[in-house]
Image (cartoon, rainbow, N blue to C red; front, side, top):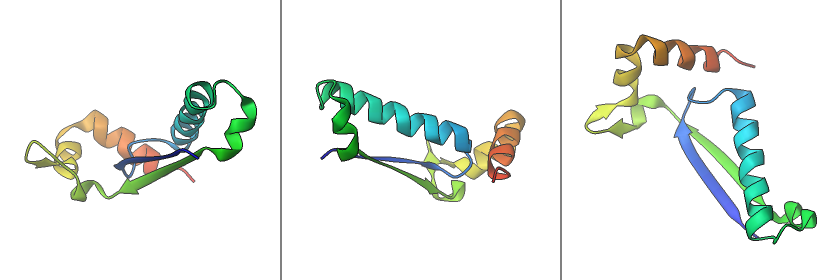
Length: 84
C-alpha cells in the first residue's frame, strides 16, 4: 500500500491544482507499482500537507519574504488562499 506525502506551503496550489496533483501521483503509482491494474487505485494514499509560508525557508529567506518581494507570486498566493 503506497503512501505519498507532499508538503508545500499554504497558497502555493489552487484547489484544482491540488486535486490534479493528487490524481496524477495516484495514476503514476497505479502505472508503476500496480503494473497498470486499475484495481490498485484503492490502495494508493496521497496526502497533501500545507504549511504557513513563514515556516519555510529557502537559502536563508522565508517564503513569506519571497512572496512579499515578488508581486506575481504574492498575487497567485492570495488568489489561491481565497478559494473555497
